[in-house]
Each structure stands twice: as C-alpha cells, then as structure tokens.
Image (tube, rainbow, N blue to C red; front, side, top):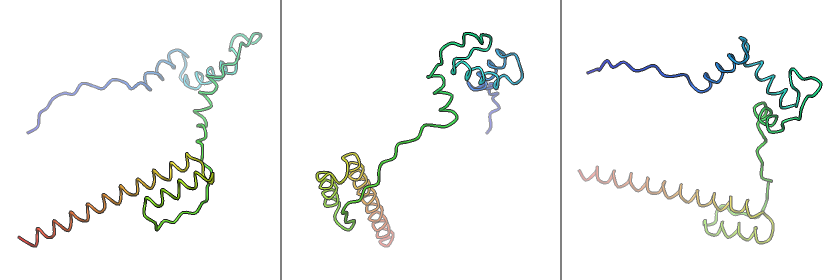
Length: 145
C-alpha cells in the first residue's frame, strides 16, 4: 500500500545560501573567489580602495583563513619504553605502569593512557567470554531438543 503524498521541496542548505549571498554582494559570477581575496586583504590589513591607509592586520581572520588551508597540527605523545610483560594478569600490568610512573620513566598522562588501554582490553575480553558462553549454552539447548 503506497501513499502518494507530495513532499514539500527542501530549502537551500546553509552553504548554498551563503554562496548565493556572496555572489550577490560581490556582484559577479566568480563571487566566491573575490570574496576570499577580500577576506585575505582585510586579514592582512589591506583595504581595496584605501591603499594609503591600509589599516591593522586582523590575526583572528588570518588564522581562520590559514586553518582552512592547512589544519593545525595535532599533538603527538613521545615514544616511551619501559619493562612491560604482556603475559601478566591485567592488575599486574597496571602495577607495572604505576611503577614506571612513580620512577619517572613515563609521564602520568601516558601512564593513564596505558591503564585505560588495559581496562579496555579487559572489557573486550569480558564481552568475548560472554559471547562464547552464550554460544555454548545455545548449542547445548539445541542438542537437548
């Protein structure tokens, strides 16, 4: 059973509305390009019509322009090495990490990341174990039928 309802047309998206406004304001077909040139000029403190008194640069505007060209670099943690036995129980591994923090071998934020990773691995193992047990129980129930 299909209903033939007419769906009202969607309005223009924000990006399209903004580009339309830029084209109208710049009064040319290549309005986006001219707009971006104007943004850069203002950011640098250069006015189009006032070459003698350029004005002050706008660092905030320049930062916005530059962040669109090249996004800021993400910080990266330094590599650390310390005694870590992956075969130990999880609580013993966490103890190894805490010892390394206490001895100044690894920074506390990196240590916290290790402990969080150990906790995540425990959760994954727990879910895996529950899934395996459930499959065994279902197969036993199927055999009893």
